[in-house]
Amino acid sequence: MVSGPPKNNMLHGLDERTASIYSPVQDGLARVDDRLRSLAETETSPVQPLLQYVTDGGGKRVRPAITLLAAQFHPHDEERPIIMASAVELLHLATLIHDDTVDNSPLRRGRATVSNTWSPHVAVLFGDYVFATSATFVCDTQNIRVIRRFSETIMELASGQLMEYFTAFDATHARDIYNDRIYRKTASLFCTASESGAVLGEAPENEVQALRDYGYNVGMAFQVRDDILDFEGDASNLGKPVGSDLLNGVLTLPTIMLMERYPNDDLVQSLFKDRSNEKKLQKVVEVINDSTVLSDCEQVVQDYSNKACKALDALPDCEPKRSLINLAEYITARHR
Image (cartoon, rainbow, N blue to C red; front, side, top):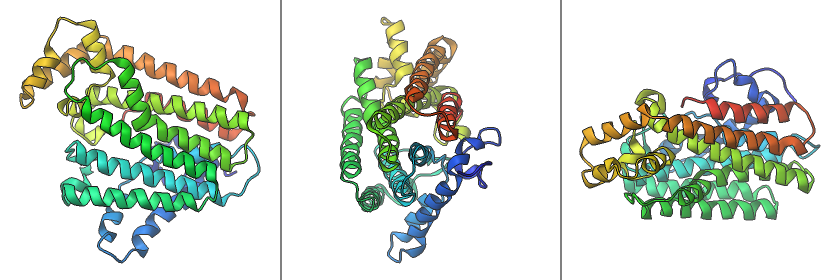
């Protein structure tokens, strides 16, 4: 294990105070980044500039970090978790490309999206290309359990996106449907990141399940926190417009809580009937910010984070375990 913060803090989206979270897997993450960069450097087809664009886009590398940290509890073949971590990050990038295309999002991480830079048609095809590339990586782990789980994750990601599409602009959207959707769209990949790392790290089954539970709860916390940021952040920090989910008819926890609290208020329904009215969107954002809705959502995030940390009780105390706990706390408090 390597101590000290990663050399490239900005690449992982962490400041000096929190960069040490990745210290046990610093070298592994550097090798993941090298693998991603080499895809663009070795590609000679028209896909090359697209690969260059998305692999240069930065990001916090949370999911591959979880994969590598989950593999650190027992002696193991170090190469296979790095391959898996690369596959996990590629799968994440593919979902972002498709999500931005479906949502007509102009920005991602402060830069124009692939669909906005090239075209929606190119983005869909390129997203498929990245999906397929991630699958070739995971096959190189030669672990059938991990390969199957990865395939199931792709199905869950797609079904979550379909759920979002078919429930868009539906103000009767229930919280249990929301929880199912964000598991599929977000927490599913976190589960796979942690479970696959544990499996490839040759952990016993009880620890594999504990780390999968950790991934589930961290993933749910991550998405609810993201939904909070959609209302309380600003476009420069978020890398996307404030209120963009609601503008696309996607009901997230803050909006659901608002409707639960004020069932006779038609603010959301009124916006959905007049989607181009920016003043109505601003009004919903203001009401949510002026109420206790966001603080109540923060408590939901904290509850998931606490469950994630509790799941780690089954694992031996060591630096990777402390990093996983710190990562859960970081996700709870993040501002972008």
